[in-house]
Amino acid sequence: MNRKAFRVIGVIATSGVAALGLGTAAYASGVSGPAIYVDHVLYRTVATPTELSGTGAPAQSWDTIYNFFGAQPSVATAAPGDPGFNGGRWQVHKVSTPNGYAAALAAGDLDGNGVLDSASEIQAALASGALVDDGIVKYFVCTLNKVPARP
Image (cartoon, rainbow, N blue to C red; front, side):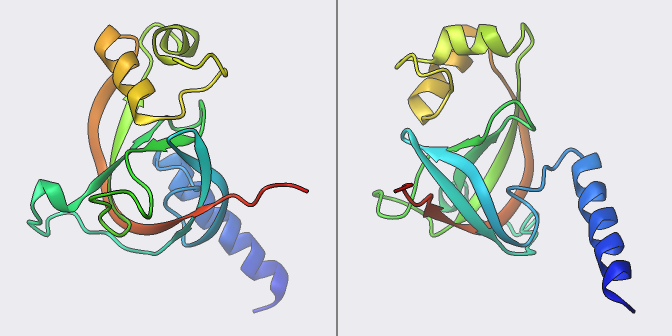
């Protein structure tokens, strides 16, 4: 096959993942761009093509990623170096904003920076009802790497 054919296949595959509502940043294999906040710090990922649903692993063996599916980057509950970090094993929770994203920001953006970017901000928005946890949609493995500072 020529390069153009491979590119077309890649676009179709990526589109298929996005169409399933899984978003490419946290699920496609390879290095992402800025994709996940942890404690107000932006990380990129190196995802692996893993699917760990049905392994029977105990709940404490996973960290949580809250995925907004396009409204903003995801938010994770832990990062490398945090006590109890599970080495990049994630359960992904889909979250929705029944009253709109602006209402979730108003309820949860505790530092006023215009984005929900920490677990405490997610919890505040969830507690208010402006953000809803729609449940686990995926179990997988990926690393987190801080987005390099721009010079």
